[in-house]
Length: 107
Image (cartoon, rainbow, N blue to C red; front, side, top):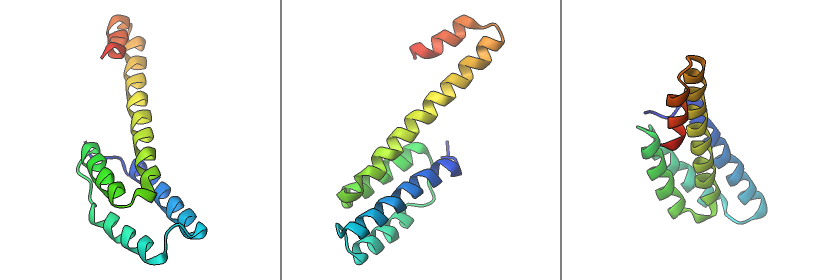
C-alpha cells in the first residue's frame, strides 16, 4: 500500500524541523543540510510503507543526526496501524460481530 500523502507530509515536516534545529544549533552545516535534502528527494516516490521504512533507515544511517526522523516515522506508522485496527474493530462491533472484532486484537 502506498503511504498516504498526509503521512508522508508528517515525516517530511519532522525532517524539516530537525534540519532547522540542527542548523540553528550548529550541529550540521549548510552543505550537509543541502546534501541530505537532495538525497532524501532521490527516495521519492515511495512504493509502500515498507519501501518508506527501508529508504528512511538507509537515509538516517547516512545522516545519524537525523535519526529522529526515522523514529518519528516508526511512531506514526504504529499509530496508523493501531487506528486501522480500531476502525475495523468498531465496524465489526457495529455489525454485532464481537468475536471477529476481538480476534483482530490477537493477530
